[in-house]
Image (cartoon, rainbow, N blue to C red):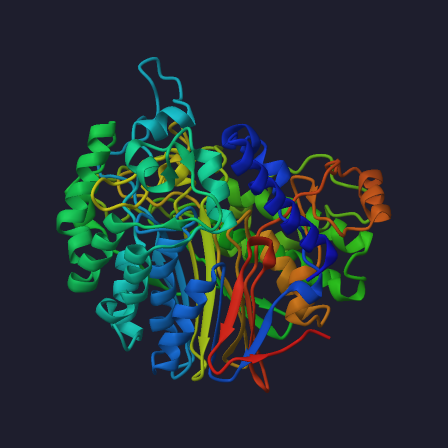
Length: 598
């Protein structure tokens, strides 16, 4: 461990001791973000494991342990992923939970097929484009929408893993939920991430949540034991009855009742109607590789367009921390995001110009805007419809209350905090990547009474005013920048990446570090990243920052960490698993063999 990280931990310990002795928890923790900012790891601080029998890379040691134990007992990667996610609902309730929706990207080694299971939240059937307007026709604020429970969507991952286990797994909830139930009932020591989240949202937590996450009026500190008996009850019902009690029984009834008491729209019928879709992934050819990702939301298209724009620039010929490389990545991301936020949302409701966006003519016109000697002043959207074969068509979706609307120019709301990503691979070559979210659910602070899990606020990502491509509709999935990605070569999944935030740009940079620069997983994860909102990580050379500013990029004065990217990579010696220390990630392997980075 580096001297910097030892110093940070010592500072944390000193801070906590001071809190206890002085009895001024609230005053000291008010500046939690500044005092406990995450550090950017050096390569030697990234834990890398190797095993031919399977690996798991998650953002919590208990989840990784649950996954590898399932595989050690003969379960496959999907079984292990379900066990890991159920544990994460207990130990990382600020990032995922039973109220979460998300995506499962799965490669089945025996058939060579890759599937995308969409378990995103869906809006209530009572939702309509004007639901977020007040009596004067003005958009309601985020805080009002969340406080009233209007942003709660039907969560999808309980049904998602139900479908995934029945189709691809060898175990079921009755066995896989046991580690999560034991942790919820017996308790576990709160980690730094969860303690910080409690401090951050302590003013918004409702009474039920405060009873769980606070003690004697102050947030739980790192190391204090968190017991969640109500959540254990919900998990037991799922272990005994699968997804039925969640979507057809008493859990659905409890959620709908609580949401309606807050002023929201969800009903039991919305839960009964919910189902996932199993789709063909969006595929991108990048050199000798094929990349599979999210076909149904903004993030997948952003990732695809970013890779397509960058490929001819041959990023690998530049040094990893060079001015040219960072500049090209920033400019290509700005271009890729311009169309994604304007045209892409739930394809069940809005026509999306996939073929136009992927056409080489369109891409070449967009690439021509990138110059190595200056930043684009403004990034205007191109017109992918002009490159789409044939004319636009209109889909009506399969929802009876859907009425055709006109896509306007509203932009998609950014993905809020409260997201998790992890990945698992087994000895047979099956690979799973899972990204899930509450959509910043703790910003509202609503917990389901008697069942102990936090409600999502995913509906806050819909556009506020009617006419936007991302206006809310009955049963619609809000646009999302979440996009797990899986790299294939010669029909085999060889790598998977993803990030809880702030979008695909972070894991694309890690992917390029491996594919273009030949980095090992530790160095690929540790390399400092940049983002198009002019943020950067510690480690970007000072002269490069000044060079970016000279080109016109108004880079922030202070650095900030950018996401956390668990990574799994296939080699001739078996799987390598690495998880990102930016969020204290942990990778474990079946029959674990430690591997130190060079």
